[in-house]
Length: 67
Image (cartoon, rainbow, N blue to C red; front, side, top):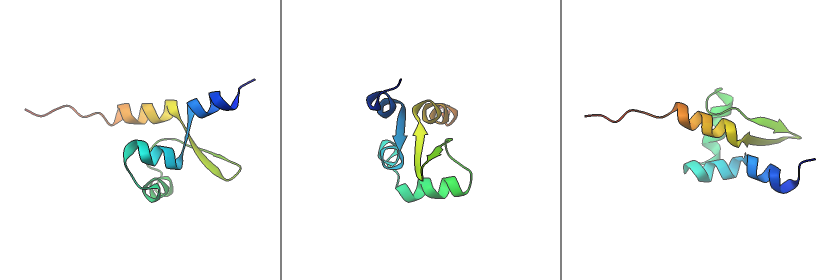
């Protein structure tokens, strides 16, 4: 059985992700509407992002440096 602490370590809520990326929560809402951004879960009306999905999205956004 998972504990609340384990869940908190593997999921981010909208506010936490907005803080992590220095974005507004509204930007994340718009991305969900437009089907952009990382995958998310909607649990009982709450939106949460799995840390694995957030990190995969970040990795996909990596850009090579220019010359």
